[in-house]
Length: 220
Image (cartoon, rainbow, N blue to C red; front, side, top):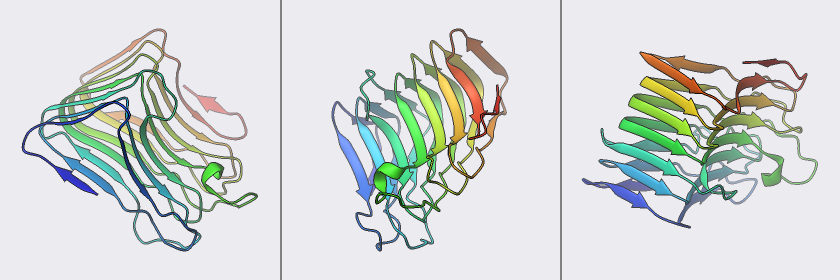
């Protein structure tokens, strides 16, 4: 799926853009690309789901290029909206790439890449890795009002969770924001990296910034 505009793109309330491989033998789902001069995703969902038991050569990535304008991902606390790249099989989940924005605002919404048993047959062992979340080439990054950035695997997963990488001139985390990588299976949680920033501000209460493995070890 490729959405391109010379101006801004607004994806408004209750909209869904989704790519789903649907069956266990179909390989990876397709990727979703948005390329515009400013992107707003308001109380809506963008999702890729790969259910394949066949190792795919490509990932079902979500790639959003804001073209130097604002990137706004805004929720109302309703579960299920946000950006999701998931696997329920042996192929890896897609990455989520957000880049090239003067302001990236993630407000009360979820960005999540995962290996999830809800997308797999019962008792299925998941060999696919969770993807990575890479937010880059941003002037000001604000994660606030309970927003969550997550890379995770579920209990029946045997592979690793992805990493989270934030690269912005200014990074502000506030009011219940959460950035977390976690492994509830046999793999390891991914790293969290905040780089190329001249200003990092964490305004309490921030819910958590952590890496958590099934052993329960945790680093803040």
